[in-house]
Length: 210
Image (cartoon, rainbow, N blue to C red; front, side, top):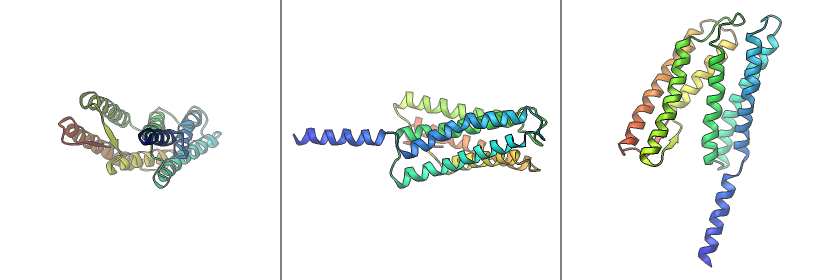
């Protein structure tokens, strides 16, 4: 009877942990902001810049709110012990959707913004993300499991890319400075992934830090 009761308690705890808690709901809200951001920014890029400044401002606001929710859901997950497997999947997915959309759109030819992202930067960012995804899948197939946790270098990469997007949306000069900083951080985190991934494949590491 005690064993059955213990199993029941464990199942209830896992069910409660896997529910859509506050942190995960905020993350989902960030994902839903991506289409709004894309529509606003694309509308601005394809229209008369002087008559559609509100679209640029709206795009910046939606992007800024998304960034704030990124920090908020992580804080809530840690302080309220709401860290779940669903959250570890949704959080990086939301970041990738937001940043990849922004980076691709800001590389398109346009007359609305003073600067645009170079094509090589887009290739670098997307190649790194694809490499990480395929690498994690390979490790999971060969080792049976893979545990991914954020690293300082990965956070610096995400932050530098966000700053670059904001820099261009704000039409600030010398955009090449944040672009190169983000590019270096992106490439460095790519190398970091390669090192940690190799350790997992060799059995010398248990955690993949990104």
